[in-house]
Image (cartoon, rainbow, N blue to C red; front, side, top):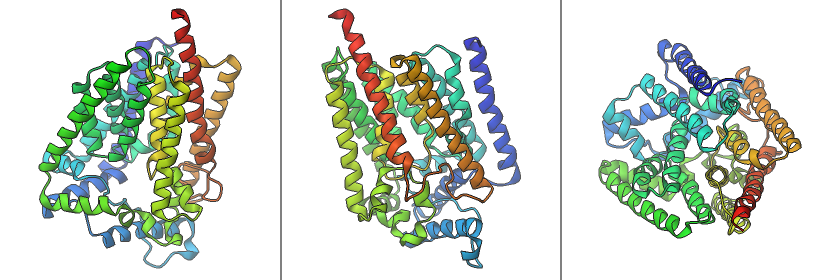
Length: 423
């Protein structure tokens, strides 16, 4: 068994080596990671025109180019003569991320170092906060292709998850004013993370004792975060504010959902959010969006009823909130920490047989992601990080609700055990 200090050193070295490898593959070759390229172009546009956003027609052209790029690889007979190469997605975030990059001049290499630090901090922090002592719990984060792929793409998602974990921990410890700037920073990049914070606050109210203190801390944190967000919006260039409001008022016009059904391939295969399932069933975007939010609310309500009056661990509350974020958000192309959060949160409540079964299921799902990624790189399968299809979205319909249900039932069992000594 590895000593904790050695495990931490080896884990950190693994992500540092990945960073160096990525620099050699992309940055040293004069390229940028595909997701960071999107942020860098937005920062460049912001400096030139005062807004990081292109017109809606240009955004749709970018989605169309992604479709044509996939056709050229996976359906070469159907590809046109001008099929594009690898295409980065359009910038769909609030102006805050582009503004930070534009003002700080953060390079691609520096951004990767920041993401590597966030990944190490996220995984080590979760290891400690989940209360599991064995260093073996760092292994899933080392072999998760979802986490590796998001990192190697230079995606800001890892940093946001790490900051969300920090903010929730500060709120759990009743430090709302310390949590508020972190919450604001996350929401200024991806507002859909409000679903995570809202779920965590609601679930925290199930924890006993100190529910009134937690409610007070949550209200203070929310109020302070809103003030900080408003202050940051005031420093956005006027053109950026106007363009963001245009996007926020009609998001479907700027997402790949605006394309005709045929041109949404393969993005609709990558997307494992329930919203995509509702769209595949024929619902219009507005109705599908309402249905996904309603599903989020339903699962959150069930969670509150099941856990009412029971002591709740931080790990269970955060793992549930993360699963509910995936349920409610419109697009989820990777599940970078779902298995890590789920395994750690439910492990103490499982029997030996249950643990073996869960490890086998988690390993099987993780292996399917590796297979999908390998086939995607080889130009054989367009699923990127999933073997599910729009016709059979088994991860969305089974794995995601299964993870939520497992954490919920484990939290209920642990909550009963936590109350027993005081009874």
